[in-house]
Structures are given as C-alpha cells and as structure tokens.
Amino acid sequence: MTNRIGIVVVLALLFGVGQVRAQELNCTVNLNLVNLSEEGRRTWETFKQDVESYMNSHNWTSNFEGERIACQISYNITSGSSAQVFIQSTRPLYKSGELTTMARFYDDKVEFGYTRGMTLQHGTQYRSLETLLDYYAYVILGLDFDSYDPLSGQQMFQMAYQNALVGNASNGAGWGRLVTASGAYSRYGFSEDASGANARSLRELTFRYHYDVLDQLAVDEDKARTAFAGFIDTLIQIKRTSSTIDRSVYFKNFLEAKYAEFAEFGRWFKGNLDLYFQKLRYLDPLHQTFYEEARKKFAD
Image (cartoon, rainbow, N blue to C red; front, top):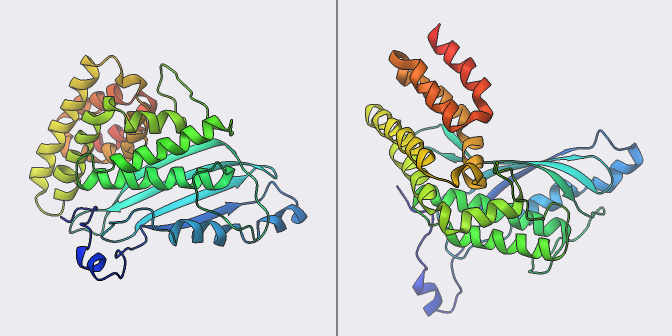
C-alpha cells in the first residue's frame, strides 16, 4: 500500500521548476439555510463555491501522493453569523470499493462572518471562517495520514493545534480549552490531545486497525478477523490500565467515527455475541443502545 506522504521530487527542484504538488482534498460543502429569511439567504449565495474552492485548490502539504481525500462539511446556519457544522471524511479500503469513516465531528459552537462573494484568505492570522477551515483541513489530513503510516499525521495535528492556539488567543467562538472528565469534544482539546505524547500509542494502534483489519478485508478476511479480535482486546487492556483514556478527546472521536463499523463486525462473533458486544459497551458506553440493537440483529 502506498504511503500518503510522498518523497520530495528532487529533480524538479534541481531544474528550477518548483516542487511537484497535488491538492489533497476533495471537499463538498452542504448548506442549510431554512432558519433564514429569503433576504438573509442572499448573503450565502456564493458560500458553497467559495469554501469548496478554498479547501480544494490549496496545497495543504508539499509532498502529497495518491487520490484526493473525500470529505464533506455541512453547515446549518442558525442565524446571520452562527452555525452548527458537521465534518466527515472517508478513506478507501485496499483492493475494495468500500469506504471507512475517518473524521466525524459535530461542532455546534461555530460563529464567523461572511458576505456574498467574500475572498477567503490563507494565512496565520486569526480569521473566524478561514481558521476554522484550516483547522479541519489539517485534522482530516492527520487522520488520513496516520492510517497509512504510523504517526505520519503528526505535523498535520500540530498545524491544527496551532490554529486552535490562534483561535483561543483571539477569543474566537468555540476555541476555548474545554477540559472535562468525559473527553467531551472541543477543537482545542482534540488537537492538543492528538498532537500530544499521550495519544501516540492510541494513534499507532488505530494505524494497525486500518492496516491489519480494514485493508485486509478484501485480501484475507480470516486474517482481518483475528487482527480485529486482538485490536479490541488491546483497547480493553489499555482502558483497564489507563487513568487518562476516558478523558481522551482523540479516543472518543475515534469511536465516534468507527462505532457503526465495530457493530457490523458482530457478524464475525455470532458464536459469542454477548461477550463481543459487552466489550464494545465497555469501550464505548455512549453508543451502547446502538450496540444492543446490533446484537439483537445478529442474534435473530
């Protein structure tokens, strides 16, 4: 399988033609304006194309290889400057037409200014809309890179964290450092966690999940099933011995992206369904109702 992080094309530099680059994202923007008046909706007429151009035409890295990463950003505009945003990205599985969800974030503390035809600018200074877009672009890239090569998304997570620091220093909406015992989502919390040392073992383990389980499904399903059983048991062992995993925003969002996938793998454990779903409920109590419905489905 090809590493997402390609090597620098040295010949291009030697001959003075610049570094060979490719845009990394294939981002689709969805916009819900039902809460606005007809007059208020006119402000947003160019928003979709402006944001898609900002995300898709920029070179977020200097050495990207492979297919663009498919992602969606869905905006529910609740007023002239406030929104709820859902972010999702997917990754293709090796030798398969199937996809796995990588990023799955619901962000309900979004405020930014926008006017029709507004020019969006890349840069390091705080801008309410662009800083938010930069943050999620780097998070999407970090998650994707990590799934192909362990810890290769580190620079992307650090870039996301830098955006969180800028947003926090500027007192931007939703950029506060929310610290809870439950690992509740915040932009600052996720990027701080993902880029920090405490999450490295979890990030390495999620690489093994993608490489040894998901990318093996179309090649050797028995091997994938064995690897998955070991992966779940390792997560349980980590949770039993760790004093921090329940506060890990990174871990909570990994489960948010993968819980439906985990439930579907119940088909591998029909001989011991109760134990398998008991393990899932222990790891991920937030989705225990979903897991119970899945258990019933496989038990029928």
